[in-house]
Image 1 (cartoon, rainbow, N blue to C red):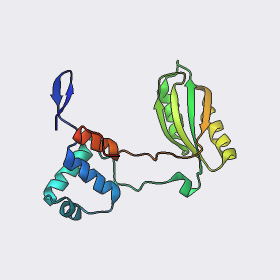
Image 2 (cartoon, rainbow, N blue to C red):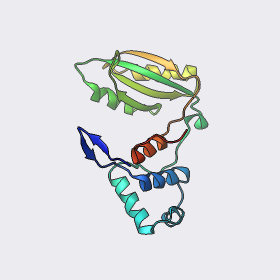
Image 3 (cartoon, one colour):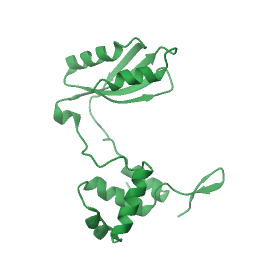
Length: 173
């Protein structure tokens, strides 16, 4: 394995192959204990605990909470909304407004014709209108463009990315 390089200088990978195996195991079985994890990975319990602590401290692992499917709790419509905002006010006040709306799952500052891209959910198309009305009610938002997602083709995932980061190669298809 060759270390990654930036500007010709080798840099250490943020995760190695053991980290990747550890993350994959916890992703597949979030309720697995450290002892069982160490048994399955064939490494010491202390090694697993130390690796988990480091991955958490560095922000690689964000948490161990349950992954919720919005559709399973009644929010069956997913949409992506591009917002154009008043430049004089900046992004932070708009982001603070969006954070008060439970149906706004994510928001990113973007390049291109818009300023912010949001992923939102709703119970129905009529409910989506209510959510969008709430989003654009803020005076710092000038325009919204909405695209409704018809079907999920690739579920949110990061494990292939972790494998690539750990090994420097693409995972097998």
